[in-house]
Length: 146
Length: 288
Image 1 (cartoon, each protein chain N blue to C red):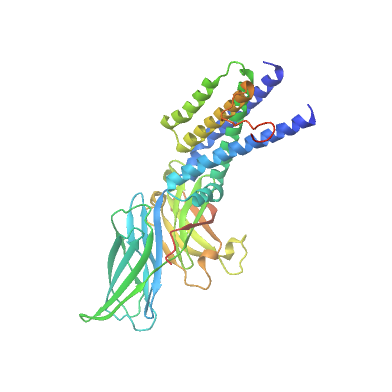
Image 2: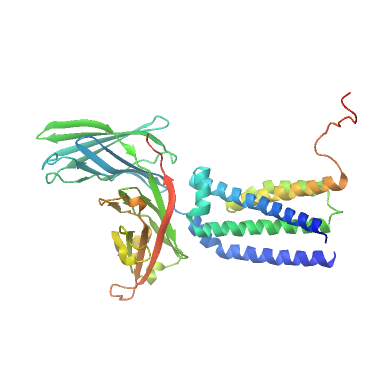
C-alpha cells in the first residue's frame, strides 16, 4: 500500500469518526433537550459533565455508529455492482420508519441520522461510479466569456 | 469476496456485537443515571428592605406536585416583630407571558424577634417552562387589630447550582444550592428490594470546613442529617431545607453525601459510602 493511499485511509477514517461522533452527539443532546425541556447548552452539560455513565454510554453509541458505518461500507464494496439508487431510497425510507418503532428517542434520532449518512455515502459512491451529477453545473467556456 | 474483505467484515461484526452487548448490558444503568426525576422548575427568591429580609422563598414544580413558600422571614432590627404579631406576606410573581401569580402567607409570632419560617403551599400545576421575570413581596404586620407596618419590595431570583453525584448503584440528584441555602436532592438506587435488605437509612450532607483537607472526611461539617426507614427515604417525598449562616458562600464549598444503610436498628456495621456531589448547572433565570 502506498503512503498516499495510507494517508487517504487515515483521512477517511477521521472523517467517518467525526461524522459518527456528530450523529451520536446530536441524537443524545436532542433526546436530553426533549426529556428535560432544556436549552442546548444545558443538554450538552447533561451529556458531558452531569454523569459519567451518560458520557460513557454516549461514547459506546459513537463506537456503535462508527462500526455500523464501516460494516455498511464493506457490504457496499462487496455488492457494489448490484447496488442502485433504489437501495439509497430504502435507507432514506428506513430513516423515517425508525420513528414509528417503539424505542428510546435517542436511538430513533441516532438510527435516523445514521441511515441518512449511509444513504449519502451510497449516493456519493454511485455518483462516482456512474458519473452522474446531482447538481446542474454550468459549463465554463474554454476561452473566456462569450 | 476476497480474504481481506472477509477478515475486515468479521472483525467489524464481532466488534459490533461486543458493543451491542455492552450497550444492552449497560442500558438500565444508563437509563437510571440519565433520565432521572424531572424538575420542571425550581426558583429560590430573596429580598429585603431596611426592616425585613426574606430568604429562600421557593417556587417549585415537578411531575408530581407544585408548591410555593418555604422561605424564612427575619427582621433586621431588634424588637421589630413582637409576640402575638400577625404577619401577612403577599407574594406576587409575574412571568414572561405577563401572567400574575399571587400567594399569601400568614404567620403568628410566638416570641419577639423570632425567625418566621413560611409554610409550603401546594398549588395548581403551571407551565413547566415557567419563567418568572418579576417578583414582589408585601409585608404587613398586624398588632392589636391594627396594621402597624405595610411595605412592598422587590424579590431577587437567586441563581441556583444543581449538585449531583452517583456511584454504580446509588445516585443523588437535584441538590439545589445557592450562597446561603441548600435543598436536599433525590436519592435512588438500582438495587431492587433495597428496603428489604436494609431497614434504616441515614443520609448526611457534609461540606468542607474553611482550609480543610478535601480528602479528610473529618474536615467536613455535617449540615443536613436525614434519618428514617429506607423505604421512606427512597420515596423522596419531602426535601429538607438548610440555611447556611456562617461566613463564606455555601455554593463555593466542596460537598459530599454520606449514606449509611443499616440492616436493623441494632446493626453495628452499616454499609457506609460517600458520594461526591458535583455539577455546576444553573437553574432558573436571573431577575434583573
